[in-house]
Image (cartoon, rainbow, N blue to C red; front, side):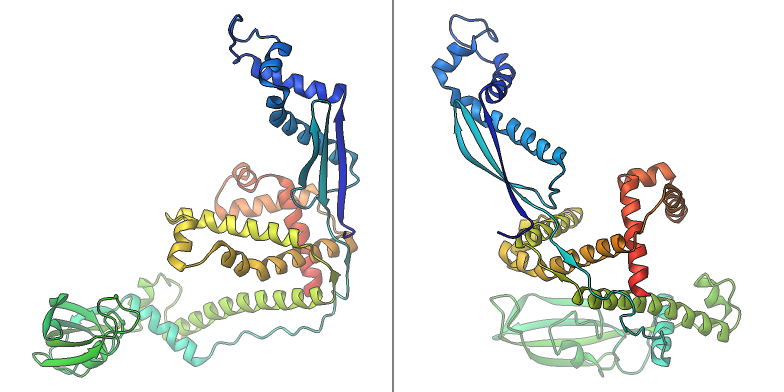
Length: 414
C-alpha cells in the first residue's frame, strides 16, 4: 500500500451503535402504522420484532459514516484529497465496523523551479498576417453588388438553377432555382463549386461528379450529373481604407492609413504577446514539473477526470445537449471519454501540486488587503458589485488560493 493511502477502521458497538439505531427509529416512528397502535405510537421492540432490526441498518450506516469521517477529520492526522472509499466490513445488531480508505496528498520532491533556461519568443507580426487582418476587417463591411459581366470567381455568389440526375432519374431534393451559392464555401459536394468557377452569366453546363463515401447511404459513391445554368453573379466589394472606414470600425483616434495599419499591427501584436506569454508559462511549468518527483495515485487521476467530464456535461447542457447525446453523436463510449481526458487530468494535478509546493517553499502568504484589492479589480473589470463578485466566486479563500498560485507562477517564470 502506498504511503499516502491510509486505512482507518471505526467501530460502533454497544451504546454507540444502539444510539444510532434509536435515532433512525425515532425518525421513522411518526410514519409507522401497525394494528392496535396509533400511527407514530408503535413501541420499538414490537416494531423490530415484526420487521427485524435490519430495516434500520441502511440509515444508521449513513449516520455512522458521517460521524466516523467527522471524527477522522477532527483528529487532523489525515486530510483526504479525494472522497474516501468506504467499506462495511461487519454489521449485526450489536456492532458495525467501517473501513475508511483515505488518500492524502502524495509526497512531492521539488526539483529546480527557477532559472529554468526556457526562452520566451518575441511577438512579431508579418506583412502577410497584417494584410490578412485588414482584409478580414474590410470583409465585415463589404458591399454585395451585381456583377454585370465577367466570369464566376471564388468568393462570388453565383445565382444558379440546377437539377441533379442519378441513373437518369431526377434526384429528389436535388433541384433549385435562383439558388445563391457562395463559391469556395464548400456548400455543395466536392467538385461542384470548382466547376461553376469560370462560367459566364447565362451559360449552361453539365457537371459530372460522384457523391463522396461519407454522404447519405442511398447516394454515397454514386455518379451524379448536375445540369446548371448561371443566372447571375454577385461580388463582394471591399470598402476603401479611408476615414469613413475607420469610423465604421469605431477607430475614432485613427485618421490616416499609416495610423490604421499601425493600430492593426499593435492589436495583432498584443494578441500574439498573450499567446506567447501563455506558451512561455506552459513551457516553464512543464520544465519545473519534469524536475519534480511525485507519484500520483490512479484514484486521484480518476477523480480529476470525473470533474472534467462533469464540467463538460454542464457546458453541453448549456447548449441543449446531454452527455449521452454527445457520446451518441460522436460514437464515443464512456471509457473513450475517460481516456481522452487522462493526460490533461494528470498534467493539471501535477501543475497544481507544483504550484502548491512552490508556494510553501517560498512561504507565499496573501493578506486580506490583497484579497480586497483583487475583488475591487474584478469588480471594475466585470462591472459587478464587490458583493456579487465574492458571491460568484464562492468565498474569499478561493481568491486567496488563486492569488497564491499566481504568485508561484510568477516565481517559476522568473
